[in-house]
Image (cartoon, rainbow, N blue to C red; front, side, top):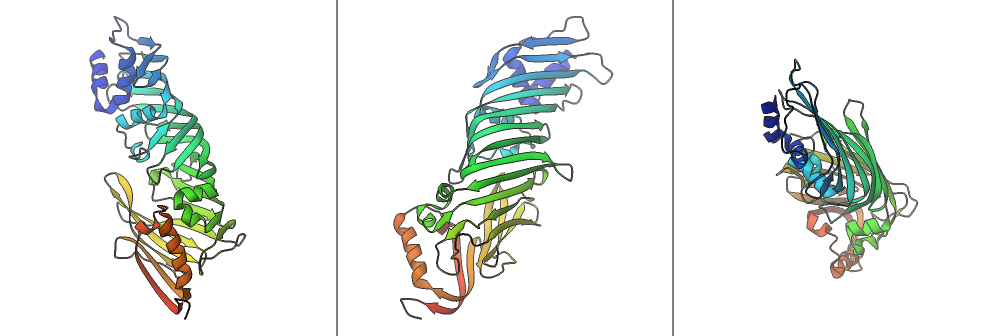
Length: 362
């Protein structure tokens, strides 16, 4: 059984377990008994402080083989805890460990691991408590901050929990709970403030887009991201844009994002904002990451298919269009150099217009 235990520690399946044990223990020797209990009180894994840890085998001669039971508690930087999960190479956690994701602040990680020496397939009961943490996403450096709460996980992935914080300027939160199909469902909510709009779109655009946007989103974690849907209430948003996009504060308008069936390695989203705009967006998985591939947004027209060309196509079917007012908007964005990013995203523009006004004349 000792040889089996040593083999378990060198197995690539148990990198995190090996780090915990090697932090505390040099030799494992149960003597002549049939059970074993070893207790450690301090150690480190990188910047993580490992507290009281126990390793126990109740019966070396159990009919189904020895079972190693490990209990440990670690405190320290969230970034180092995420590295422990990354080093485990578990597919249950890899979708959450987005390349470029930056973490700050400390947290508390508690682990209980049952490791059968015959199968080397661990059962994990984990609990992580966030204490005023922050995560910076690899998109325009969007930052979720003041994160507090706790999440629970097993070897299969997230199991439950709730986290609150601030994102895009407003209070936000996410709750993980059992879904109707038996998997785990994440339900998120939040509020995008004026500061949040500026962060996403840049100052030139947000001079013309004023207000706040409450939003909700849902996703089944075992079908991530294909099951993602979201809703945003645009009632309190004022759009100081040329027709047909102009909108008064208080005018009802809802933005909906819905998943639709896509092929293997493809994620499709439909969007709809009343009768003002519809769209379809396609994301593909490259090098382990979901990346935008192509899509179309139509103003005052219904989009039901993807364009043949890569990038984002903006199309419109309008009764009338005042080019001068739109040029003023485009000129302001170019002059400020705000870096809103929308010009780099839109690759193609097309429009069908019944009445066109330009240079002050029809």
